[in-house]
Image (cartoon, rainbow, N blue to C red):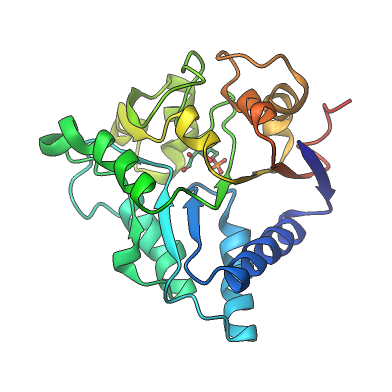
Length: 242
Ligand code: F6R
């Protein structure tokens, strides 16, 4: 992967937003892969500024979220459907109908994963996938042990990830046990991966992703299999790189 080390999250966000804006200018109906969590927020913020400042037309941009919790009550503010609406669709002014999130409703979970992969395929694939990385090394919610060929499917979150994400909930008991996530194989089909990482807590996972052996025990290492992967990290996250 190409690694770019930046001063801070804001500079990373500006850089990633430039890459996305250039894509949308070239391809007004671009397909974006959207991560949630804290990491991409500076990118979405910078992109909103860019869209407003340059009068970029994003009405035809399409989006696919990486993942969703399974079994949260409909409309829960931390469900990724809501998060994507609040942090991405509304501030960027995307067309809501063109932005999909995996369906985490247990009632339809039997077909949700296959439907999602089919929808990505029908859209012609993802042009640019924004990624964060978990302390466990996960991309999407593909925790260690996930097949590098995996497709969108239901997974169990690790205890570590539930602890890390408890900050978004009242207590860890409210963090769902399961999720539906694009598989590693699904993610690798995106034409450009942009992985962002900030802070010392991500240093080990980032080093394993960029320089470690390609292994299902470090899902982030799958980016080494991709011909066009860009890593944008601050000094702290990059501190364990050779
Ligand atoms: C989010 C996702 C996860 C996060 C990762 C890092 O859609 O798929 O892989 O990117 O857990 O989370 P933050 O950015 O909150 O540190």
